[in-house]
Length: 389
Image 1 (cartoon, rainbow, N blue to C red):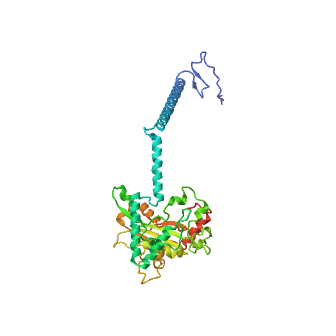
Image 2 (cartoon, rainbow, N blue to C red):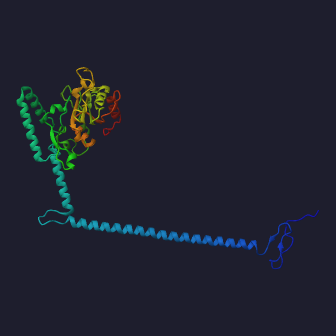
């Protein structure tokens, strides 16, 4: 049997382009044909790669130029704006009118400071929303009302004089009012103030409301526009039991946790669950005797029920929480037509605050958990942070 080798046995022709190379088993063409086709394909692919590389380089160069142009334009614009601002600042700050009054930016800053000072002075006098003429009218009406009440009968004379004296001496030398417990806005009859309704004022309408005064006639005197010291902060807040030595309800951190008073502010708009919320607050508190509820009740008189009126009359069931703690519930009732949202109502609610140790606000449709007062105070005090909210 003849053995065949895979090795090339036959040499190529002289020019290497004639005939076939191989031994008859694998014959490879040594001239044109497939070899030329492959060479042509390789050249085409190489040309395409060069073309793609050239296009990519062109795009990169173009993109770099665009970015450089954008950055240059931004820089130029910034420099121009800064130069313009500096020129205006120098020009207007040094420009004076004929009478020596500063104009331009300096005049604007001066006028702004003057307006701010007038507002603060008016606010310190206890009339943040009133003009001086309005304050004089209100003071006259208050004095007239007190005089009429004093002349009504001997009991009213005694009560009104006591209220006037308390109002006159309720502020300490530090500007912080003297806190008392128990306390109620019902003891301040004739001492409310008239303020323009802020919602109607924006609409160009003249509507005036008679509301409780703020606890402090000068709120700025309390915080002095800065963070209060610990000692000053502790001078605010009443205790259920007065100090046995000073007979003061303002005992600071010497007041036991269970006797620290709590003010709960509620803004209610025709909410039929409001009385249930008040009931829940007082019935579930571990120490209801230290809780005071202030409600701004926006209702339609004769249609909606009041938040401090229980479902069953107190004469039939005097053990209801609203009946047991009625002296710790203050309700400021206003016509629902005057309601302009929760912000204004909560502002009036904060006017009901009278120096309680803790203050919080709640919706008018809330069910409180058992012992909520101890729980929430314990959580707050456990933070060890006096700024915790």
